[in-house]
Structures are given as C-alpha cells and as structure tokens.
Figure (cartoon, rainbow, N blue to C red):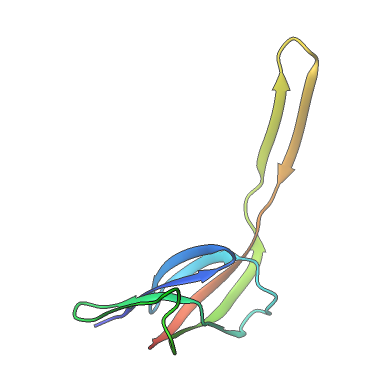
Length: 105
C-alpha cells in the first residue's frame, strides 16, 4: 500500500507518492543529490490520514534530483492597437526534476 503526501516547495503544493517524478521550482542541488522536504502538509493512505496545522510534525519526504534545466520557451507578446506599441519577450522557466523515494511520518 503506497502512501501519498502533499508537500510544499517553491511556494507551490504538490501531491506525491513513492516512485513519482515531478517538476518543481529550481533547487540549488546537483544531479543525483538527495533532497528532503520537511514541509509536509498531509500524509494519507487507504486507512490513515494525518493533516498538519500547518505541517505534519516529524514527517518528511525524501527525493533524489534527476536533473535541472529550463522548460520550453514561451512568448510574451504585448500590443496596443492603433498606437504602434509592440513588445515581444521570451521566457524559459528553470526547473528541477525530482524522483520521490520515500515518504515517512
């Protein structure tokens, strides 16, 4: 029976389970490093549920960094009609890809 958890990192919340691979905000870790997320909001499985206020005490999620990189480029285009105003800007969001190894409570 696999445990699920809701973790908080980079100002966002992610629902994860063991074996998941997720893309999160950029971490300052090298590829292959182990990362521990201690901001666990909830842990649950079929029988038990633990919800933190705001975090579950003693809970952590261990993960390993697969790779870091940048997402595909998006184009930000601004225009005001009839004014000759046009601005084109590109953006590539940096990310870290992590694999969830262990959820402990």
